[in-house]
Image (cartoon, rainbow, N blue to C red; front, side, top):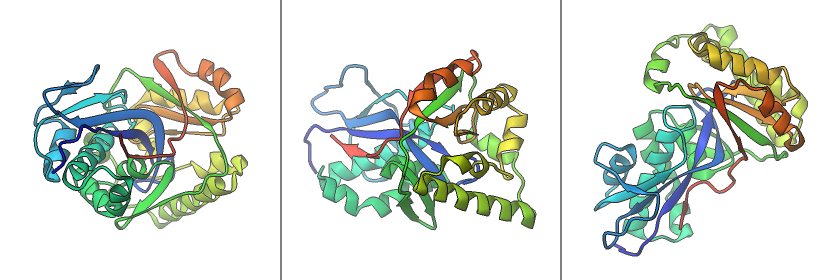
Length: 282
């Protein structure tokens, strides 16, 4: 077991992207960091976490030993994948402690890490994006990165309120009509094709959904107002990020400042990009 000082950096994520419920995720350039405490040293801005923190639970579940510190700029309970990032980071840190910090060792264990983090998270979309970066599609224990033919700005409108993912999921129906299922399958396929081809003209249609978004927005009127405001501009598309309350907006770099100014002042706006690296050991 290596006692070399290192830490793991993992990006936030936005899940679903409208139609891709529980299957599509996007890594974003705001980060969660975790590292083993070595010689009682803790980096500036970091804190040692207790046994109830999701990062600590993930670290220990994978065989990590000792105390760990975290440092994060991902808002908690806002739909930007905080718990998923923490769980991926904890497992990657434990793997690095046990098997070394080389990128080759991390890549070779990617499928195992995805499985372990999905088991803790309950669904793969956030953890897959945080693990591999970019935009990812994940199902049946597999993950692939979607080739991107565009380089957008992602605006995250983040209100002060929080959403419990577990409570939000209980409001969703247990069954779907065939029409709604076919609608989401088709629109997810359209979304992947649009991202891969760079055809931004179909992204608004591709991010439409009949599984979760309207149900969740009915309980989050400020998020609905933010989504409507985004779609009243020339943004390419917008969606409820994860279970909310954050709303994510995809747009051209030249339009980002104007679009941000049109979003409700009841939330903060983060101007982000798509993270291309996923989990890294530093």
